[in-house]
Length: 421
Image 1 (cartoon, helix red, strand yellow):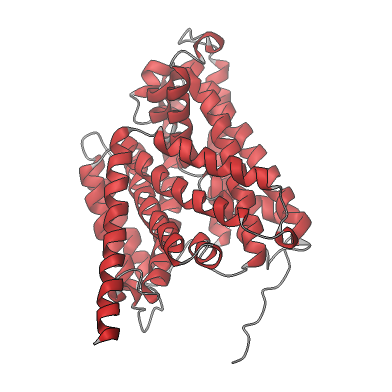
Image 2: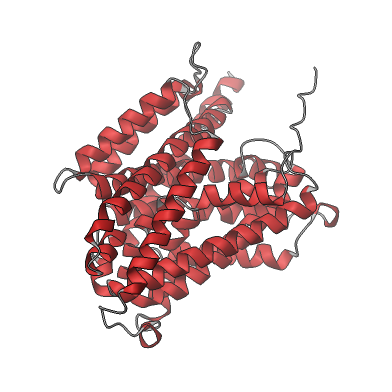
Protein backbone atom coordinates (compact mmCIF):
# COMPACT_ATOMS: atom_id res chain seq x y z
CA UNK A 1 0.00 0.00 0.00
CA UNK A 2 1.33 3.42 -0.94
CA UNK A 3 1.78 5.75 2.01
CA UNK A 4 -0.30 8.91 1.88
CA UNK A 5 1.75 12.04 1.13
CA UNK A 6 2.68 14.31 4.01
CA UNK A 7 1.20 17.77 4.29
CA UNK A 8 3.42 20.69 3.36
CA UNK A 9 5.10 22.56 6.22
CA UNK A 10 4.22 26.10 5.15
CA UNK A 11 2.88 27.70 8.33
CA UNK A 12 4.92 29.77 10.75
CA UNK A 13 4.08 30.89 14.28
CA UNK A 14 2.02 33.88 13.13
CA UNK A 15 -0.04 31.69 10.78
CA UNK A 16 -0.69 29.19 13.57
CA UNK A 17 -1.72 31.97 15.96
CA UNK A 18 -4.18 33.41 13.39
CA UNK A 19 -5.73 29.97 12.85
CA UNK A 20 -6.02 29.52 16.60
CA UNK A 21 -7.71 32.90 16.96
CA UNK A 22 -10.08 31.97 14.16
CA UNK A 23 -11.01 28.80 16.03
CA UNK A 24 -11.60 30.54 19.35
CA UNK A 25 -12.91 34.04 18.72
CA UNK A 26 -16.38 33.44 17.40
CA UNK A 27 -19.97 33.40 18.48
CA UNK A 28 -19.21 31.96 21.93
CA UNK A 29 -18.25 35.36 23.28
CA UNK A 30 -21.67 36.74 22.28
CA UNK A 31 -23.48 33.99 24.20
CA UNK A 32 -21.54 32.72 27.20
CA UNK A 33 -21.33 35.78 29.48
CA UNK A 34 -25.03 35.80 30.37
CA UNK A 35 -25.18 32.24 31.80
CA UNK A 36 -21.80 32.82 33.48
CA UNK A 37 -23.17 35.96 35.16
CA UNK A 38 -26.22 34.01 36.32
CA UNK A 39 -23.84 31.59 38.03
CA UNK A 40 -21.28 33.97 39.53
CA UNK A 41 -22.19 37.61 38.91
CA UNK A 42 -19.03 39.67 38.62
CA UNK A 43 -17.12 36.56 39.71
CA UNK A 44 -17.28 35.44 36.09
CA UNK A 45 -13.99 37.35 35.72
CA UNK A 46 -12.32 34.83 38.02
CA UNK A 47 -14.15 32.02 36.22
CA UNK A 48 -12.74 33.29 32.93
CA UNK A 49 -9.18 32.95 34.26
CA UNK A 50 -9.92 29.42 35.53
CA UNK A 51 -11.39 28.43 32.15
CA UNK A 52 -8.29 29.78 30.39
CA UNK A 53 -5.94 27.74 32.62
CA UNK A 54 -7.88 24.53 31.97
CA UNK A 55 -7.96 25.35 28.25
CA UNK A 56 -4.17 25.74 28.23
CA UNK A 57 -3.64 22.37 29.93
CA UNK A 58 -5.99 20.68 27.49
CA UNK A 59 -4.37 22.30 24.46
CA UNK A 60 -0.89 21.21 25.51
CA UNK A 61 -2.11 17.64 26.02
CA UNK A 62 -3.63 17.66 22.54
CA UNK A 63 -0.44 19.12 21.06
CA UNK A 64 1.70 16.40 22.61
CA UNK A 65 -0.64 13.67 21.37
CA UNK A 66 -0.99 15.17 17.90
CA UNK A 67 2.79 15.08 17.50
CA UNK A 68 2.76 11.31 18.06
CA UNK A 69 -0.48 10.61 16.17
CA UNK A 70 -0.63 13.11 13.27
CA UNK A 71 -3.98 11.90 11.95
CA UNK A 72 -7.58 13.04 11.99
CA UNK A 73 -9.93 11.96 14.76
CA UNK A 74 -8.45 13.84 17.71
CA UNK A 75 -8.92 12.28 21.14
CA UNK A 76 -11.14 9.57 19.67
CA UNK A 77 -7.92 8.24 18.11
CA UNK A 78 -5.63 9.18 21.01
CA UNK A 79 -7.85 7.45 23.55
CA UNK A 80 -8.05 4.26 21.47
CA UNK A 81 -4.28 4.20 20.96
CA UNK A 82 -3.18 5.09 24.50
CA UNK A 83 -5.97 3.74 26.73
CA UNK A 84 -8.06 1.29 24.72
CA UNK A 85 -11.21 1.15 22.64
CA UNK A 86 -13.62 2.09 25.44
CA UNK A 87 -11.86 5.34 26.44
CA UNK A 88 -11.57 6.19 22.75
CA UNK A 89 -15.29 5.61 22.30
CA UNK A 90 -16.13 7.74 25.35
CA UNK A 91 -13.99 10.57 23.98
CA UNK A 92 -15.58 10.37 20.54
CA UNK A 93 -19.13 10.11 21.89
CA UNK A 94 -18.50 12.99 24.33
CA UNK A 95 -17.21 15.08 21.44
CA UNK A 96 -20.23 14.30 19.26
CA UNK A 97 -22.80 15.09 21.96
CA UNK A 98 -20.90 18.17 23.15
CA UNK A 99 -20.47 19.65 19.69
CA UNK A 100 -24.05 18.78 18.75
CA UNK A 101 -25.12 20.94 21.69
CA UNK A 102 -22.68 23.59 20.44
CA UNK A 103 -24.57 23.60 17.13
CA UNK A 104 -27.79 24.28 19.02
CA UNK A 105 -26.10 27.04 21.04
CA UNK A 106 -24.78 28.72 17.89
CA UNK A 107 -28.18 28.52 16.19
CA UNK A 108 -29.84 30.04 19.27
CA UNK A 109 -27.15 32.75 19.43
CA UNK A 110 -27.75 33.63 15.78
CA UNK A 111 -31.48 33.87 16.40
CA UNK A 112 -31.06 35.91 19.60
CA UNK A 113 -29.24 38.63 17.65
CA UNK A 114 -30.97 38.33 14.26
CA UNK A 115 -34.58 37.27 14.82
CA UNK A 116 -37.57 39.42 15.80
CA UNK A 117 -38.85 38.88 19.34
CA UNK A 118 -40.86 35.68 19.59
CA UNK A 119 -39.38 34.18 16.43
CA UNK A 120 -36.05 33.03 17.87
CA UNK A 121 -36.63 29.28 17.82
CA UNK A 122 -38.16 29.08 14.31
CA UNK A 123 -35.32 31.21 12.94
CA UNK A 124 -32.76 29.03 14.73
CA UNK A 125 -34.23 25.87 13.19
CA UNK A 126 -34.28 27.52 9.76
CA UNK A 127 -30.59 28.39 10.14
CA UNK A 128 -29.74 24.80 11.03
CA UNK A 129 -31.62 23.36 8.07
CA UNK A 130 -30.14 25.92 5.68
CA UNK A 131 -26.54 25.29 6.73
CA UNK A 132 -27.07 21.53 6.76
CA UNK A 133 -28.22 21.88 3.14
CA UNK A 134 -25.12 23.93 2.34
CA UNK A 135 -22.88 21.25 3.88
CA UNK A 136 -24.80 18.55 2.02
CA UNK A 137 -23.53 19.99 -1.25
CA UNK A 138 -19.95 19.91 -0.02
CA UNK A 139 -19.54 23.58 0.86
CA UNK A 140 -17.71 24.14 4.17
CA UNK A 141 -16.27 27.24 5.76
CA UNK A 142 -13.00 28.12 4.01
CA UNK A 143 -9.84 29.49 5.61
CA UNK A 144 -10.41 32.78 3.78
CA UNK A 145 -13.92 33.11 5.15
CA UNK A 146 -12.61 32.30 8.62
CA UNK A 147 -10.20 35.23 8.47
CA UNK A 148 -12.99 37.55 7.31
CA UNK A 149 -15.28 36.43 10.13
CA UNK A 150 -12.50 36.87 12.72
CA UNK A 151 -11.74 40.36 11.42
CA UNK A 152 -15.44 41.33 11.54
CA UNK A 153 -15.86 39.93 15.06
CA UNK A 154 -12.75 41.71 16.37
CA UNK A 155 -13.95 45.02 14.90
CA UNK A 156 -17.38 44.55 16.49
CA UNK A 157 -15.84 43.66 19.86
CA UNK A 158 -13.55 46.70 19.66
CA UNK A 159 -16.63 48.84 18.97
CA UNK A 160 -18.39 47.36 22.01
CA UNK A 161 -15.41 48.13 24.27
CA UNK A 162 -15.01 51.71 23.00
CA UNK A 163 -18.73 52.48 23.22
CA UNK A 164 -19.10 50.80 26.59
CA UNK A 165 -16.08 52.20 28.39
CA UNK A 166 -16.73 55.72 27.06
CA UNK A 167 -20.08 55.55 28.88
CA UNK A 168 -18.36 55.13 32.22
CA UNK A 169 -20.09 52.94 34.84
CA UNK A 170 -23.85 53.49 34.47
CA UNK A 171 -24.61 50.26 36.36
CA UNK A 172 -22.72 51.59 39.38
CA UNK A 173 -21.10 48.19 39.91
CA UNK A 174 -17.99 47.75 42.08
CA UNK A 175 -16.31 44.75 40.49
CA UNK A 176 -13.69 44.42 43.21
CA UNK A 177 -16.24 43.90 45.97
CA UNK A 178 -18.48 41.58 43.93
CA UNK A 179 -15.90 39.14 42.54
CA UNK A 180 -16.36 36.48 45.22
CA UNK A 181 -19.92 37.26 46.30
CA UNK A 182 -21.31 34.01 44.86
CA UNK A 183 -18.59 31.81 46.38
CA UNK A 184 -16.27 29.23 44.82
CA UNK A 185 -19.07 27.01 43.50
CA UNK A 186 -20.58 29.84 41.45
CA UNK A 187 -17.16 30.83 40.13
CA UNK A 188 -16.35 27.28 39.09
CA UNK A 189 -19.75 26.90 37.41
CA UNK A 190 -19.13 30.11 35.49
CA UNK A 191 -15.74 28.73 34.45
CA UNK A 192 -17.38 25.59 33.09
CA UNK A 193 -19.87 27.67 31.11
CA UNK A 194 -17.19 30.10 29.87
CA UNK A 195 -15.08 27.13 28.74
CA UNK A 196 -17.57 27.05 25.84
CA UNK A 197 -16.11 30.35 24.56
CA UNK A 198 -12.62 28.82 24.29
CA UNK A 199 -13.84 25.90 22.15
CA UNK A 200 -11.61 25.40 19.13
CA UNK A 201 -8.22 26.18 20.66
CA UNK A 202 -6.98 22.63 20.10
CA UNK A 203 -7.04 23.30 16.35
CA UNK A 204 -3.49 24.58 16.83
CA UNK A 205 -2.49 21.32 18.47
CA UNK A 206 -3.48 19.27 15.43
CA UNK A 207 -1.26 21.19 13.02
CA UNK A 208 1.92 19.22 13.67
CA UNK A 209 2.24 18.19 10.01
CA UNK A 210 1.60 21.66 8.60
CA UNK A 211 3.85 24.02 10.57
CA UNK A 212 7.55 24.71 10.38
CA UNK A 213 9.51 23.45 13.40
CA UNK A 214 6.37 22.14 15.18
CA UNK A 215 8.12 21.37 18.49
CA UNK A 216 8.82 25.08 18.86
CA UNK A 217 5.98 26.63 16.86
CA UNK A 218 2.99 24.79 18.36
CA UNK A 219 3.70 25.58 22.05
CA UNK A 220 4.38 29.24 21.21
CA UNK A 221 1.25 29.52 19.10
CA UNK A 222 -0.94 27.91 21.78
CA UNK A 223 0.27 30.27 24.49
CA UNK A 224 0.13 33.37 22.27
CA UNK A 225 -3.36 32.66 20.94
CA UNK A 226 -4.75 31.85 24.40
CA UNK A 227 -3.26 35.02 25.90
CA UNK A 228 -4.69 37.19 23.11
CA UNK A 229 -8.11 35.60 23.45
CA UNK A 230 -8.06 35.91 27.24
CA UNK A 231 -7.24 39.63 26.99
CA UNK A 232 -10.04 40.19 24.46
CA UNK A 233 -12.55 38.23 26.56
CA UNK A 234 -11.48 40.02 29.76
CA UNK A 235 -11.96 43.44 28.13
CA UNK A 236 -15.43 42.45 26.94
CA UNK A 237 -16.36 40.95 30.32
CA UNK A 238 -15.28 44.07 32.23
CA UNK A 239 -17.11 46.31 29.76
CA UNK A 240 -20.37 44.35 29.96
CA UNK A 241 -20.26 44.14 33.76
CA UNK A 242 -19.57 47.86 34.18
CA UNK A 243 -22.14 49.05 31.66
CA UNK A 244 -24.95 46.51 32.01
CA UNK A 245 -24.26 45.14 35.50
CA UNK A 246 -24.26 41.47 36.58
CA UNK A 247 -27.99 41.29 37.42
CA UNK A 248 -29.20 42.52 34.03
CA UNK A 249 -26.46 40.57 32.27
CA UNK A 250 -27.64 37.33 33.89
CA UNK A 251 -31.03 37.60 32.15
CA UNK A 252 -29.89 39.17 28.88
CA UNK A 253 -30.45 37.40 25.56
CA UNK A 254 -28.13 39.75 23.62
CA UNK A 255 -25.70 41.23 26.18
CA UNK A 256 -23.42 43.05 23.74
CA UNK A 257 -26.40 44.80 22.18
CA UNK A 258 -27.42 45.80 25.71
CA UNK A 259 -24.02 47.49 26.12
CA UNK A 260 -24.75 49.72 23.12
CA UNK A 261 -28.28 50.62 24.20
CA UNK A 262 -27.37 51.20 27.86
CA UNK A 263 -24.46 53.43 26.78
CA UNK A 264 -26.90 55.52 24.69
CA UNK A 265 -25.24 54.38 21.47
CA UNK A 266 -28.25 52.82 19.80
CA UNK A 267 -26.63 53.36 16.39
CA UNK A 268 -24.10 50.64 17.29
CA UNK A 269 -26.71 48.00 18.14
CA UNK A 270 -27.43 46.95 14.51
CA UNK A 271 -23.68 46.64 13.86
CA UNK A 272 -23.28 44.38 16.89
CA UNK A 273 -26.26 42.29 15.76
CA UNK A 274 -24.78 41.81 12.28
CA UNK A 275 -21.37 40.86 13.72
CA UNK A 276 -22.86 38.37 16.17
CA UNK A 277 -25.10 36.83 13.50
CA UNK A 278 -22.16 36.44 11.09
CA UNK A 279 -19.99 34.87 13.78
CA UNK A 280 -22.76 32.45 14.79
CA UNK A 281 -23.45 31.35 11.21
CA UNK A 282 -19.73 30.86 10.52
CA UNK A 283 -19.30 28.80 13.68
CA UNK A 284 -22.42 26.75 12.95
CA UNK A 285 -21.28 25.97 9.40
CA UNK A 286 -17.91 24.73 10.66
CA UNK A 287 -19.48 22.74 13.51
CA UNK A 288 -21.92 20.91 11.23
CA UNK A 289 -19.03 19.83 9.02
CA UNK A 290 -16.83 18.81 11.96
CA UNK A 291 -19.44 16.82 13.86
CA UNK A 292 -20.52 15.07 10.68
CA UNK A 293 -17.01 13.89 9.98
CA UNK A 294 -16.34 12.69 13.53
CA UNK A 295 -19.63 10.79 13.38
CA UNK A 296 -18.48 9.27 10.09
CA UNK A 297 -15.20 8.09 11.67
CA UNK A 298 -17.01 6.48 14.62
CA UNK A 299 -19.58 4.83 12.34
CA UNK A 300 -16.81 3.30 10.25
CA UNK A 301 -15.50 1.64 13.42
CA UNK A 302 -19.08 0.55 14.24
CA UNK A 303 -19.02 2.74 17.36
CA UNK A 304 -22.13 4.37 15.89
CA UNK A 305 -24.73 2.87 13.53
CA UNK A 306 -23.19 1.90 10.18
CA UNK A 307 -25.92 3.89 8.37
CA UNK A 308 -24.13 7.06 9.50
CA UNK A 309 -20.96 6.04 7.60
CA UNK A 310 -22.54 6.68 4.20
CA UNK A 311 -20.72 9.14 1.93
CA UNK A 312 -22.63 10.85 -0.87
CA UNK A 313 -21.41 9.47 -4.23
CA UNK A 314 -21.41 12.91 -5.90
CA UNK A 315 -20.77 15.48 -3.19
CA UNK A 316 -18.40 13.29 -1.11
CA UNK A 317 -19.85 14.33 2.25
CA UNK A 318 -21.19 12.18 5.14
CA UNK A 319 -24.76 13.08 4.18
CA UNK A 320 -26.53 10.60 6.48
CA UNK A 321 -24.55 11.90 9.47
CA UNK A 322 -25.33 15.50 8.58
CA UNK A 323 -29.05 14.80 8.07
CA UNK A 324 -29.20 13.07 11.47
CA UNK A 325 -27.30 15.97 13.04
CA UNK A 326 -29.72 18.55 11.61
CA UNK A 327 -32.69 16.64 13.02
CA UNK A 328 -31.16 16.24 16.50
CA UNK A 329 -30.00 19.87 16.69
CA UNK A 330 -33.43 21.11 15.59
CA UNK A 331 -35.01 19.09 18.42
CA UNK A 332 -32.50 20.54 20.89
CA UNK A 333 -33.26 24.08 19.76
CA UNK A 334 -36.99 23.55 20.24
CA UNK A 335 -36.64 21.95 23.69
CA UNK A 336 -33.83 23.84 25.42
CA UNK A 337 -32.58 27.37 26.00
CA UNK A 338 -29.16 28.90 25.36
CA UNK A 339 -27.85 28.29 28.89
CA UNK A 340 -28.90 24.64 28.75
CA UNK A 341 -27.23 24.16 25.37
CA UNK A 342 -23.98 25.77 26.55
CA UNK A 343 -23.93 23.70 29.76
CA UNK A 344 -24.57 20.45 27.87
CA UNK A 345 -21.88 21.36 25.33
CA UNK A 346 -19.35 22.05 28.07
CA UNK A 347 -20.23 18.72 29.73
CA UNK A 348 -19.33 16.73 26.61
CA UNK A 349 -16.27 18.71 25.62
CA UNK A 350 -14.78 18.72 29.14
CA UNK A 351 -15.08 14.91 29.31
CA UNK A 352 -13.43 14.73 25.89
CA UNK A 353 -10.45 16.71 27.16
CA UNK A 354 -10.33 14.76 30.41
CA UNK A 355 -9.55 11.67 28.30
CA UNK A 356 -7.05 13.72 26.27
CA UNK A 357 -5.16 14.65 29.46
CA UNK A 358 -5.14 11.04 30.71
CA UNK A 359 -3.95 9.85 27.30
CA UNK A 360 -1.12 12.39 27.27
CA UNK A 361 -0.16 11.41 30.82
CA UNK A 362 0.61 7.85 29.60
CA UNK A 363 3.10 8.97 26.96
CA UNK A 364 6.75 8.08 27.48
CA UNK A 365 9.54 10.51 28.25
CA UNK A 366 10.66 10.45 24.61
CA UNK A 367 7.16 11.44 23.46
CA UNK A 368 6.67 14.22 26.01
CA UNK A 369 6.82 17.94 25.38
CA UNK A 370 5.27 19.11 28.65
CA UNK A 371 5.56 18.05 32.32
CA UNK A 372 3.09 15.45 33.56
CA UNK A 373 1.89 17.93 36.18
CA UNK A 374 0.18 19.94 33.41
CA UNK A 375 -1.83 16.89 32.36
CA UNK A 376 -2.73 16.16 36.00
CA UNK A 377 -3.91 19.76 36.46
CA UNK A 378 -5.86 19.57 33.19
CA UNK A 379 -7.60 16.30 34.10
CA UNK A 380 -8.54 17.54 37.58
CA UNK A 381 -9.67 20.86 36.14
CA UNK A 382 -11.95 19.15 33.61
CA UNK A 383 -13.59 16.99 36.28
CA UNK A 384 -14.08 19.90 38.69
CA UNK A 385 -15.69 22.06 36.00
CA UNK A 386 -17.93 19.18 34.88
CA UNK A 387 -19.34 18.51 38.36
CA UNK A 388 -20.00 22.21 38.98
CA UNK A 389 -22.01 22.72 35.78
CA UNK A 390 -25.78 23.34 36.17
CA UNK A 391 -27.43 20.17 37.51
CA UNK A 392 -29.75 19.80 34.52
CA UNK A 393 -26.73 19.83 32.16
CA UNK A 394 -25.03 17.09 34.20
CA UNK A 395 -28.16 14.91 34.40
CA UNK A 396 -28.95 15.14 30.68
CA UNK A 397 -25.27 14.65 29.86
CA UNK A 398 -25.08 11.48 31.93
CA UNK A 399 -28.27 10.12 30.35
CA UNK A 400 -26.98 10.70 26.81
CA UNK A 401 -23.56 9.32 27.74
CA UNK A 402 -25.22 6.20 29.15
CA UNK A 403 -27.26 5.82 25.95
CA UNK A 404 -24.07 5.74 23.92
CA UNK A 405 -22.48 3.20 26.26
CA UNK A 406 -25.62 1.06 26.09
CA UNK A 407 -25.58 1.10 22.29
CA UNK A 408 -21.94 -0.02 22.19
CA UNK A 409 -22.52 -2.80 24.75
CA UNK A 410 -25.43 -4.14 22.67
CA UNK A 411 -23.38 -3.96 19.48
CA UNK A 412 -20.45 -5.82 21.06
CA UNK A 413 -22.77 -8.52 22.42
CA UNK A 414 -24.42 -8.99 19.03
CA UNK A 415 -21.04 -9.29 17.35
CA UNK A 416 -19.79 -11.73 19.99
CA UNK A 417 -22.88 -13.92 19.56
CA UNK A 418 -22.44 -13.86 15.78
CA UNK A 419 -18.80 -14.93 16.12
CA UNK A 420 -19.77 -17.82 18.40
CA UNK A 421 -22.58 -19.03 16.11
